[in-house]
Image: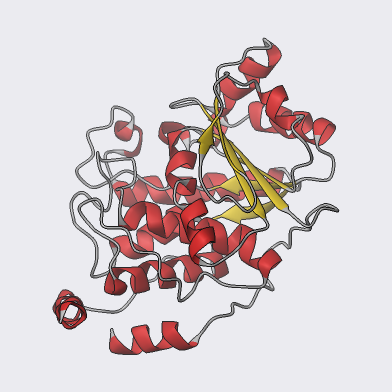
Length: 311
């Protein structure tokens, strides 16, 4: 654990050879839009706070939210000209979420200026079932391409449910968290192969699996708050580190490694020790999207580090 902390404290840049570089438009601001549901909310919730901590002022993030929304539902909403989305936005230089009063349509968001990166994902219960992706993923890509021809498309590869999850769709994976993750990874790779327009993978599921195999995991909740949504502490923080590292760091040329954002929420709070694990997991997942090798470190060492930090 000590070696991990020292390594993180002295390493600030990441090799970006495997990461798609996102060019901002002429105003010098990188703009990212997520088309998603509560899982994208989990992934993005702490991004403004992380940007503020890293003193990044030229990134704007926004998200379209409908709870439990699938690719099919996103497509149908668009085809029917419906406006069901809650739209929240963190403008460049402000680094705080603001929710728009009016409900949005997908078309409303796509017409709201020029987006550099647009993310898509599947509803969690079907995230490991590729047959549920099509033809809706392909159709949504066409819609995005028509409205935003210069935007890079990213795929948000979500995480599996916790060991003790009671989610009704967990049975699709025999109530096996590892089996679900393997299916999610397989479906994500198939999606990327079928659609070359997907240039970036956001490996959220890999990051969480790395942490579930580490000393900071709170089995059987596995960093969730309800068996499937990420906890308000280390879970959401690790996701923000992952989103930043894969989407934003190539633009700012600054890694999230060494950030001092701390969040005293949830069953696994973000402390100096747990933050080190989260940052390491995010970096490793971004480098190796579909590989979840164990992060070393014992619970005894973790407790010792936490005790020293309190003194």
